[in-house]
Amino acid sequence: MNAGLPILRLGDILLSGLLSDLDDKTALAFTDELTTRIANEGIRGVIIDISRLEIIDSFVARVLMELAGTGRLLGTRMIVAGMRPAVALTLTELGLQLTGVRTALNAEQAMELLGWRRPAEEAPHAS
Amino acid sequence: MLGTDDSQVRSVLARMLEEDRSSLARDWAGQEPHDGDRNGQDLRREAVELLDALRTALGGTLPVSRIVDQDPAVRDALTSLSERRARAGAQPSATAMAILALKRTMLSAIERHTDDSALRYRAALLVNELLDSAGVLTFEVYSAGRERIIREQHDQMLELSTPVVRLWRHVLAVPLIGTLDSARTQVVMNSLLEAIQANEARVAIIDITGVPTVDTAVAHHLLQTVSAVRLMGAECVISGIRPSIAQTITQLGIDLSHIVTRGSLADALATAMQLLGDSARPGAVTG
Image (cartoon, rainbow over all chains, first blue to last red):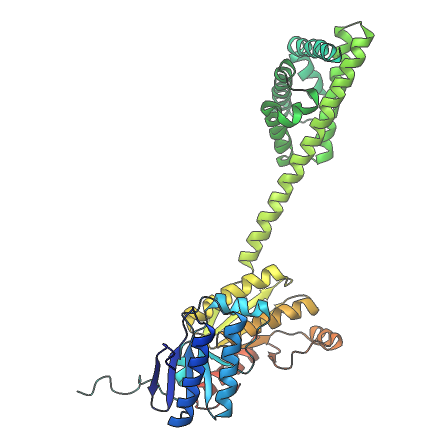
């Protein structure tokens, strides 16, 4: 059951990331844990950071698309963040468009998409 | 038997080239149209260089059919001759003709050198073989030089024609100029995606005002770029679609309906600002 991939919870948002050596078992366990937590903890949004992925093959692409589909059924928005330019190029060349998966440039922008505000306008320190 | 004959002919020719070196060079250079003394001197120096190289090669052991290909001195002389003339603006055919003109000069020199008609005949055959391949080589060098220049210019054009400019905070633009083929799409996509990452851009505007025609291939490349940009998490707007291009796109039945398109770059920028405003609002951007 333990996927080995950390899943952080920030309010009603789950934050996780994929590593480059994702195999079937890990992917399944990850999907399992994620969906269970979405359902149990009333999660509104999920962010998956893929900035560590040097390559996305059709398997990882399918995992991401299935996650997005499952998330939608459970009423959450899933955002894939931090795709590298080279990965985006390869994906388009392969014709894998990650249909149904929302993307963001990095985790921060993904948080903004989910409605989180940058605390820039607030006072820097409240000691 | 043939070998001994061959070597006899070669030694005769080598001797002839040595003795008549200056007169041959003068005759040959004299046949060419040239303006001014300096040019004439250049021609003569060129001629002497080539004749010397030929003489040394004929004195060696390489078979005649391979002299031009494999003798480094002859090859160098011919290459530099061809390159110098190409740089001076000569046509490749003129250069080849000049090499072939050397044939005539050498044949008349052979006539002066020997009365033996069999020897003359064989020498003529040998000179023919040698200089024909020399003419071909000059042509090859010329076209290889041309190819190199074209390739260099092509590479330069690729680099020059794909600037990614930052229009606003989080807004990038790529003004495309010229036809969009797959090689250029690669370059555009690469630099655009890198720039998106570097500038944390949210909207990329691809301006195709400078693209003369949009056919299915170009449209396909545009679509590819747009989907790559979307994968990075940015939105893509295509601008600068002229009326004629819009007509072609609809006539070809290319579906751009899921891409935001605008007439002018100004409109696209306005749209980009709208998208930026929306993306800051929670829940506005939908897949």
